[in-house]
Length: 244
Image (tube, rainbow, N blue to C red):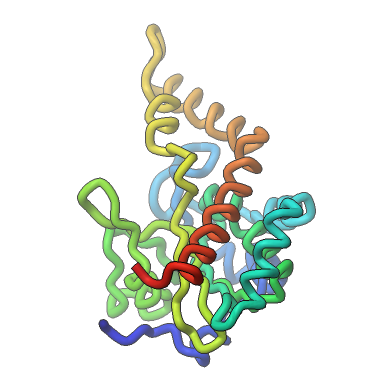
């Protein structure tokens, strides 16, 4: 197995959640490119980045683990070689990151774990499916390459990524993009499909409107909670059944 680039020294360079929220609204971050298809105007690669710091702050304020989730992560942390650190790869333009990163911060707090957040990209947004660390030395593409999302016969540099480690950086589990109960591809395909009588522009506008409404609905909180349940269950399986 190739040696991981995630060392104690590299992990320490990541941002805490509070640092990440402040960074999201900083001039440095706002000068970076965004992935525009997730913006209200449906732009493309290289779109202007918006300040999402208030969104992260609001979602963190309302995010709560259930009593069962909180008790379970405390039990897991107390076990020999239990979880101690969480590495997160994020981009604030991603609705999946805005959904999950705040509740991942709550998970870390509940278990007394150390959490560090890394941007995926540098000044330029990733324009290819597979990152090339040499082409973007200001990005964290070398970390991203360790945690590619393999699905549908291909692989993608999907965010968010959450990787849970023991205190000595033995990987216990990883979570990528969205929980299994959220069939995002099918839902988005339906939202983006043309309706009878719509122009192309009308279809695009309606699809983005429906997507924004879904983000504001209780289902985003439901899927965030499901992500935590999925991670906790994977940790329990690893500790009681060992590595697959």
